[in-house]
Length: 286
Image (cartoon, rainbow, N blue to C red; front, side):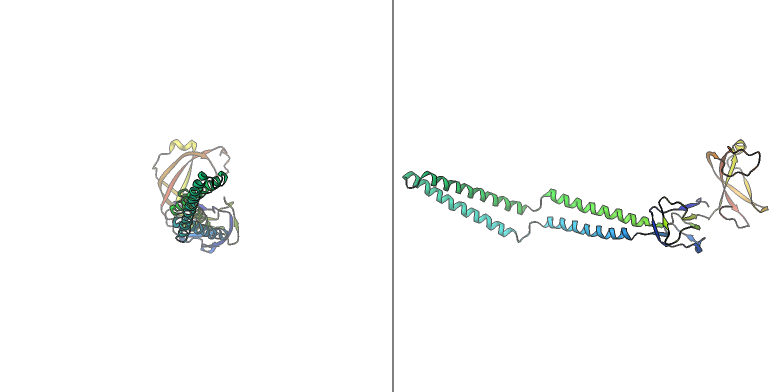
């Protein structure tokens, strides 16, 4: 194929639930993005549902922080401030009275000190409830809101990871082409990387031929040279070939003819030609 043989594998290990191109539809033309088969993704979908709920909880937590303070909790806090102020005024009056009585000798120093310390305690309590009211009216602390926002982003990222894994369970055709072979069935376990070619796909709009030129003949070859080929079993009809490219990396020869003069260590230059036109049917792999 013009695209070469594309061996489709599974990015994830698991049991195949569906095969959208069964074996009896080999030869079917598909477009890029066409679903080919689907690996079991039920656990990932359940995980996505849990993560969706976690995202809603994180969003609700942020909404709660942004809505603070609640209107219902402010009046009680203001009432506590008023009560603390009244208590402080009461003990201030008691302390002033005892100070005058102390000068006349009507009360002792110990009782006067007790009233003074009680007044100071009331003032401290007044300051405390005022600070609590100010904190309440200020709303949620900014770092707490940032933590809640980060929790939302983390939940969203986890959902995107799971969605990507679910999408990877659905294997699609990477290019437009024709299904050449299907070697997977529903219920079979596939591994990643696959131990076999599950589906073979290729673009058959133009067939190509890979030519091996022995390294001893490389000097006789020039780019763009015309070529013709013969299909095995039909030596009477030639097929015109158009030069496409040279793969400049010389590789060991893979197929040996069995000739006694052929060396096992032969290396070859591979040249790609495209079939221009032919009156006979040719198939990938010939």
